[in-house]
Length: 327
Image 1 (cartoon, rainbow, N blue to C red):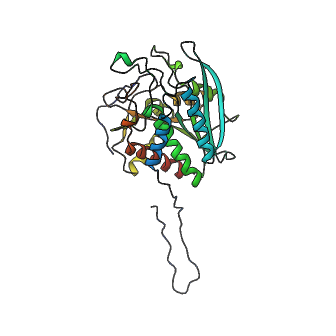
Image 2 (cartoon, rainbow, N blue to C red; image 1 turned 60 degrees about the vertical axis):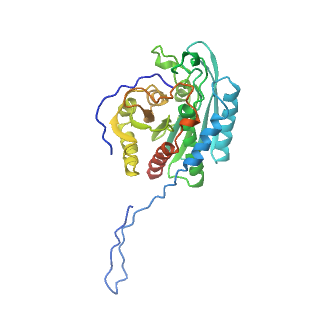
Image 3 (spheres, helix red, strand yellow; image 1 turned 120 degrees about the vertical axis):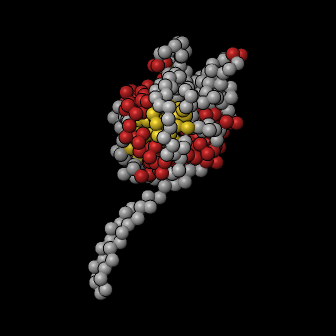
Protein backbone atom coordinates (compact mmCIF):
# COMPACT_ATOMS: atom_id res chain seq x y z
CA UNK A 1 0.00 0.00 0.00
CA UNK A 2 1.07 3.55 -0.20
CA UNK A 3 3.46 5.51 1.96
CA UNK A 4 2.14 5.79 5.49
CA UNK A 5 1.19 9.45 5.87
CA UNK A 6 -1.99 9.57 7.88
CA UNK A 7 -2.12 12.78 9.90
CA UNK A 8 -5.23 13.28 11.95
CA UNK A 9 -6.58 16.79 11.73
CA UNK A 10 -9.29 16.60 14.35
CA UNK A 11 -10.03 14.86 17.58
CA UNK A 12 -13.81 14.89 17.55
CA UNK A 13 -15.82 12.79 15.09
CA UNK A 14 -19.11 14.00 13.66
CA UNK A 15 -21.07 10.75 13.47
CA UNK A 16 -23.73 11.40 11.20
CA UNK A 17 -38.48 9.19 -2.30
CA UNK A 18 -38.54 11.57 -4.01
CA UNK A 19 -42.24 12.16 -4.44
CA UNK A 20 -44.20 14.11 -6.94
CA UNK A 21 -47.03 16.44 -6.17
CA UNK A 22 -49.76 15.68 -8.62
CA UNK A 23 -51.95 18.67 -9.34
CA UNK A 24 -55.64 17.88 -8.87
CA UNK A 25 -58.11 18.97 -11.54
CA UNK A 26 -61.59 20.40 -11.08
CA UNK A 27 -64.58 18.14 -11.75
CA UNK A 28 -65.31 17.89 -15.44
CA UNK A 29 -62.00 19.42 -16.45
CA UNK A 30 -59.99 17.64 -19.13
CA UNK A 31 -56.78 19.29 -18.02
CA UNK A 32 -54.56 17.55 -15.49
CA UNK A 33 -51.42 19.19 -14.19
CA UNK A 34 -48.76 16.92 -12.79
CA UNK A 35 -45.27 17.58 -11.61
CA UNK A 36 -43.36 14.37 -12.06
CA UNK A 37 -39.95 13.46 -10.75
CA UNK A 38 -37.89 10.60 -12.04
CA UNK A 39 -37.36 7.87 -9.48
CA UNK A 40 -33.93 6.31 -9.93
CA UNK A 41 -33.82 2.63 -9.10
CA UNK A 42 -30.42 2.03 -7.51
CA UNK A 43 -29.41 -1.66 -7.60
CA UNK A 44 -28.70 -3.47 -4.35
CA UNK A 45 -25.05 -4.31 -3.75
CA UNK A 46 -24.63 -8.01 -2.96
CA UNK A 47 -21.95 -8.33 -0.27
CA UNK A 48 -21.84 -12.12 -0.63
CA UNK A 49 -21.00 -11.75 -4.31
CA UNK A 50 -18.34 -9.12 -3.59
CA UNK A 51 -16.83 -11.36 -0.90
CA UNK A 52 -16.47 -14.19 -3.42
CA UNK A 53 -14.76 -11.83 -5.87
CA UNK A 54 -12.30 -10.93 -3.12
CA UNK A 55 -11.69 -14.58 -2.25
CA UNK A 56 -11.14 -15.53 -5.89
CA UNK A 57 -8.24 -13.08 -6.06
CA UNK A 58 -6.72 -14.21 -2.78
CA UNK A 59 -6.88 -17.81 -3.99
CA UNK A 60 -4.23 -16.93 -6.57
CA UNK A 61 -1.86 -16.10 -3.70
CA UNK A 62 0.15 -12.85 -3.63
CA UNK A 63 -0.32 -10.83 -6.84
CA UNK A 64 3.16 -9.33 -6.98
CA UNK A 65 4.21 -8.14 -10.45
CA UNK A 66 6.32 -10.71 -12.35
CA UNK A 67 4.85 -13.63 -10.36
CA UNK A 68 2.70 -16.50 -11.64
CA UNK A 69 -0.10 -15.46 -9.30
CA UNK A 70 -0.03 -11.97 -10.76
CA UNK A 71 -0.31 -13.24 -14.34
CA UNK A 72 -3.12 -15.66 -13.50
CA UNK A 73 -5.11 -13.11 -11.53
CA UNK A 74 -4.74 -10.50 -14.28
CA UNK A 75 -6.21 -12.95 -16.77
CA UNK A 76 -9.05 -13.71 -14.35
CA UNK A 77 -9.90 -10.03 -13.89
CA UNK A 78 -9.92 -9.30 -17.62
CA UNK A 79 -12.12 -12.33 -18.26
CA UNK A 80 -14.52 -11.36 -15.50
CA UNK A 81 -14.98 -7.87 -16.92
CA UNK A 82 -15.55 -9.31 -20.39
CA UNK A 83 -18.10 -11.78 -19.05
CA UNK A 84 -19.81 -8.89 -17.26
CA UNK A 85 -20.34 -7.07 -20.54
CA UNK A 86 -17.55 -4.50 -20.41
CA UNK A 87 -15.36 -3.43 -23.29
CA UNK A 88 -11.97 -4.47 -21.93
CA UNK A 89 -8.67 -2.73 -22.58
CA UNK A 90 -5.43 -4.28 -21.34
CA UNK A 91 -2.68 -1.75 -20.87
CA UNK A 92 0.72 -3.46 -20.62
CA UNK A 93 3.76 -1.51 -19.50
CA UNK A 94 7.33 -2.16 -18.38
CA UNK A 95 7.79 -0.04 -15.26
CA UNK A 96 11.00 0.47 -13.31
CA UNK A 97 10.62 0.09 -9.55
CA UNK A 98 12.58 2.21 -7.08
CA UNK A 99 15.10 -0.64 -6.62
CA UNK A 100 15.69 -1.05 -10.36
CA UNK A 101 13.40 -4.07 -10.78
CA UNK A 102 11.61 -4.20 -14.13
CA UNK A 103 7.93 -4.76 -13.40
CA UNK A 104 5.76 -6.33 -16.09
CA UNK A 105 2.67 -4.31 -15.23
CA UNK A 106 -0.88 -4.53 -16.53
CA UNK A 107 -3.67 -2.02 -16.06
CA UNK A 108 -7.07 -3.55 -16.84
CA UNK A 109 -9.96 -1.30 -17.87
CA UNK A 110 -13.59 -2.30 -18.34
CA UNK A 111 -15.80 0.30 -20.01
CA UNK A 112 -19.59 0.55 -20.09
CA UNK A 113 -21.27 2.83 -22.65
CA UNK A 114 -17.84 3.55 -24.18
CA UNK A 115 -19.47 5.87 -26.73
CA UNK A 116 -20.70 8.26 -24.01
CA UNK A 117 -18.69 11.41 -23.33
CA UNK A 118 -20.19 11.70 -19.85
CA UNK A 119 -18.20 9.29 -17.69
CA UNK A 120 -17.32 8.27 -14.14
CA UNK A 121 -14.05 6.48 -13.38
CA UNK A 122 -13.90 3.89 -10.58
CA UNK A 123 -10.42 2.78 -9.53
CA UNK A 124 -8.77 0.10 -7.39
CA UNK A 125 -5.30 -1.42 -7.41
CA UNK A 126 -5.05 -5.18 -7.93
CA UNK A 127 -1.40 -5.91 -7.12
CA UNK A 128 -0.10 -6.78 -3.65
CA UNK A 129 2.88 -5.78 -1.52
CA UNK A 130 6.01 -7.92 -2.12
CA UNK A 131 6.95 -7.76 1.56
CA UNK A 132 5.08 -7.79 4.86
CA UNK A 133 7.43 -5.10 6.09
CA UNK A 134 5.00 -3.68 8.64
CA UNK A 135 4.44 -7.03 10.34
CA UNK A 136 5.19 -7.07 14.09
CA UNK A 137 7.42 -10.12 13.52
CA UNK A 138 10.60 -9.17 11.65
CA UNK A 139 10.84 -12.76 10.38
CA UNK A 140 7.89 -11.96 8.10
CA UNK A 141 9.32 -8.78 6.61
CA UNK A 142 10.36 -10.52 3.35
CA UNK A 143 7.12 -12.51 3.04
CA UNK A 144 4.73 -11.42 0.27
CA UNK A 145 1.34 -10.11 1.40
CA UNK A 146 -1.91 -11.88 0.44
CA UNK A 147 -3.64 -8.51 0.23
CA UNK A 148 -7.23 -9.54 0.93
CA UNK A 149 -8.03 -6.02 2.12
CA UNK A 150 -5.12 -4.09 0.61
CA UNK A 151 -5.97 -4.60 -3.02
CA UNK A 152 -8.53 -7.38 -3.38
CA UNK A 153 -11.33 -5.71 -1.42
CA UNK A 154 -11.51 -2.68 -3.71
CA UNK A 155 -11.34 -4.83 -6.82
CA UNK A 156 -13.97 -7.21 -5.45
CA UNK A 157 -16.34 -4.34 -4.73
CA UNK A 158 -15.84 -2.97 -8.24
CA UNK A 159 -16.46 -6.37 -9.85
CA UNK A 160 -19.78 -6.54 -8.02
CA UNK A 161 -20.57 -3.02 -9.22
CA UNK A 162 -19.64 -4.11 -12.76
CA UNK A 163 -22.06 -7.04 -12.47
CA UNK A 164 -24.88 -4.67 -11.54
CA UNK A 165 -23.98 -2.07 -14.17
CA UNK A 166 -24.14 -4.81 -16.80
CA UNK A 167 -27.70 -5.58 -15.69
CA UNK A 168 -28.85 -1.98 -15.39
CA UNK A 169 -26.85 0.79 -17.02
CA UNK A 170 -26.69 4.13 -15.18
CA UNK A 171 -27.09 7.30 -17.18
CA UNK A 172 -23.36 8.03 -17.40
CA UNK A 173 -20.71 5.78 -18.88
CA UNK A 174 -18.70 3.88 -16.29
CA UNK A 175 -15.03 2.87 -16.45
CA UNK A 176 -13.81 0.20 -14.02
CA UNK A 177 -10.03 0.69 -13.85
CA UNK A 178 -7.81 -1.86 -12.11
CA UNK A 179 -4.39 -0.30 -11.61
CA UNK A 180 -1.19 -2.27 -11.21
CA UNK A 181 2.15 -1.76 -9.42
CA UNK A 182 0.68 0.40 -6.69
CA UNK A 183 2.31 -1.38 -3.80
CA UNK A 184 5.94 -1.78 -4.93
CA UNK A 185 7.13 1.42 -3.27
CA UNK A 186 9.78 2.51 -0.82
CA UNK A 187 9.33 4.03 2.64
CA UNK A 188 12.28 6.37 2.08
CA UNK A 189 10.02 9.36 1.49
CA UNK A 190 9.94 9.09 -2.31
CA UNK A 191 6.22 9.27 -3.02
CA UNK A 192 6.80 8.70 -6.74
CA UNK A 193 8.02 5.17 -6.02
CA UNK A 194 4.40 4.18 -5.34
CA UNK A 195 1.41 3.88 -7.68
CA UNK A 196 3.45 3.22 -10.82
CA UNK A 197 0.47 1.85 -12.74
CA UNK A 198 -1.60 4.92 -11.90
CA UNK A 199 1.22 7.21 -12.97
CA UNK A 200 1.47 5.37 -16.29
CA UNK A 201 -2.30 5.44 -16.89
CA UNK A 202 -2.57 9.13 -15.95
CA UNK A 203 0.06 9.96 -18.59
CA UNK A 204 -1.21 7.42 -21.11
CA UNK A 205 -4.96 6.92 -20.65
CA UNK A 206 -6.60 3.95 -22.34
CA UNK A 207 -8.52 6.34 -24.62
CA UNK A 208 -6.79 9.32 -26.19
CA UNK A 209 -8.07 12.52 -24.62
CA UNK A 210 -9.92 10.56 -21.93
CA UNK A 211 -11.81 12.55 -19.35
CA UNK A 212 -14.35 11.81 -16.65
CA UNK A 213 -16.66 13.97 -14.60
CA UNK A 214 -14.97 12.57 -11.50
CA UNK A 215 -13.26 9.48 -10.14
CA UNK A 216 -13.56 7.35 -6.99
CA UNK A 217 -10.72 5.15 -5.76
CA UNK A 218 -11.46 2.22 -3.42
CA UNK A 219 -8.62 1.00 -1.22
CA UNK A 220 -8.81 -1.24 1.85
CA UNK A 221 -12.61 -1.20 1.86
CA UNK A 222 -13.28 -4.65 3.34
CA UNK A 223 -11.77 -4.70 6.82
CA UNK A 224 -13.58 -5.33 10.08
CA UNK A 225 -14.47 -2.36 12.29
CA UNK A 226 -13.44 0.03 9.54
CA UNK A 227 -14.11 3.76 9.39
CA UNK A 228 -13.52 6.13 6.50
CA UNK A 229 -12.52 9.75 6.95
CA UNK A 230 -12.15 12.34 4.19
CA UNK A 231 -8.61 11.86 2.89
CA UNK A 232 -6.53 15.03 2.61
CA UNK A 233 -5.65 15.05 -1.10
CA UNK A 234 -9.28 14.22 -1.88
CA UNK A 235 -10.37 17.29 0.06
CA UNK A 236 -7.78 19.39 -1.73
CA UNK A 237 -8.66 18.35 -5.28
CA UNK A 238 -12.27 17.16 -5.11
CA UNK A 239 -14.08 18.39 -1.99
CA UNK A 240 -17.41 18.42 -3.82
CA UNK A 241 -17.06 14.73 -4.65
CA UNK A 242 -16.16 13.93 -1.06
CA UNK A 243 -19.25 15.82 0.06
CA UNK A 244 -21.42 13.95 -2.44
CA UNK A 245 -20.13 10.55 -1.33
CA UNK A 246 -20.26 11.18 2.43
CA UNK A 247 -23.75 12.67 2.11
CA UNK A 248 -24.90 9.57 0.24
CA UNK A 249 -23.38 7.30 2.89
CA UNK A 250 -25.19 9.19 5.65
CA UNK A 251 -28.47 8.99 3.73
CA UNK A 252 -28.08 5.22 3.50
CA UNK A 253 -27.43 4.90 7.22
CA UNK A 254 -23.64 4.48 7.09
CA UNK A 255 -22.77 7.72 8.85
CA UNK A 256 -20.97 5.95 11.69
CA UNK A 257 -18.64 4.31 9.19
CA UNK A 258 -18.16 7.32 6.91
CA UNK A 259 -16.96 9.89 9.44
CA UNK A 260 -17.67 13.42 8.22
CA UNK A 261 -14.28 14.71 9.27
CA UNK A 262 -10.98 15.21 7.50
CA UNK A 263 -8.33 12.56 8.03
CA UNK A 264 -4.74 12.44 6.83
CA UNK A 265 -2.94 12.71 3.50
CA UNK A 266 -2.25 9.44 1.72
CA UNK A 267 -0.02 8.85 -1.29
CA UNK A 268 -2.35 6.65 -3.30
CA UNK A 269 -3.40 6.19 -6.93
CA UNK A 270 -5.86 9.09 -6.81
CA UNK A 271 -3.06 11.60 -6.17
CA UNK A 272 -1.56 10.98 -9.61
CA UNK A 273 -4.95 10.85 -11.32
CA UNK A 274 -5.58 14.31 -9.89
CA UNK A 275 -2.15 15.80 -10.58
CA UNK A 276 -1.32 14.18 -13.93
CA UNK A 277 -4.66 13.37 -15.56
CA UNK A 278 -6.43 16.34 -13.95
CA UNK A 279 -9.53 14.28 -13.17
CA UNK A 280 -10.88 15.19 -9.75
CA UNK A 281 -10.76 11.95 -7.83
CA UNK A 282 -11.28 10.96 -4.21
CA UNK A 283 -9.94 8.06 -2.18
CA UNK A 284 -12.28 5.98 -0.03
CA UNK A 285 -9.63 4.39 2.15
CA UNK A 286 -9.70 2.83 5.60
CA UNK A 287 -8.64 5.20 8.37
CA UNK A 288 -7.37 4.46 11.85
CA UNK A 289 -8.52 7.25 14.19
CA UNK A 290 -5.31 6.76 16.15
CA UNK A 291 -3.20 7.31 13.03
CA UNK A 292 -1.93 5.06 10.27
CA UNK A 293 -3.92 2.37 8.50
CA UNK A 294 -5.63 -0.85 9.55
CA UNK A 295 -3.87 -3.38 11.84
CA UNK A 296 -3.40 -5.88 8.97
CA UNK A 297 -1.73 -3.34 6.63
CA UNK A 298 1.44 -4.82 5.09
CA UNK A 299 1.33 -7.84 7.41
CA UNK A 300 0.88 -11.57 6.88
CA UNK A 301 -2.54 -11.18 8.52
CA UNK A 302 -4.05 -9.38 5.54
CA UNK A 303 -6.14 -12.44 4.68
CA UNK A 304 -9.79 -13.46 4.30
CA UNK A 305 -10.21 -13.85 8.07
CA UNK A 306 -10.31 -10.07 8.35
CA UNK A 307 -12.74 -9.32 5.50
CA UNK A 308 -16.16 -8.06 6.63
CA UNK A 309 -19.16 -8.22 4.31
CA UNK A 310 -20.79 -5.32 6.19
CA UNK A 311 -17.92 -3.02 5.23
CA UNK A 312 -18.03 -4.15 1.60
CA UNK A 313 -21.79 -3.52 1.57
CA UNK A 314 -21.51 -0.01 3.01
CA UNK A 315 -18.89 1.08 0.51
CA UNK A 316 -20.41 -0.65 -2.49
CA UNK A 317 -23.95 0.60 -1.87
CA UNK A 318 -22.67 4.13 -1.31
CA UNK A 319 -20.79 4.14 -4.62
CA UNK A 320 -23.85 2.76 -6.41
CA UNK A 321 -25.99 5.51 -4.89
CA UNK A 322 -23.58 8.12 -6.25
CA UNK A 323 -23.15 6.80 -9.78
CA UNK A 324 -26.84 6.01 -10.38
CA UNK A 325 -28.02 9.41 -9.16
CA UNK A 326 -25.56 11.28 -11.41
CA UNK A 327 -27.19 12.96 -14.43
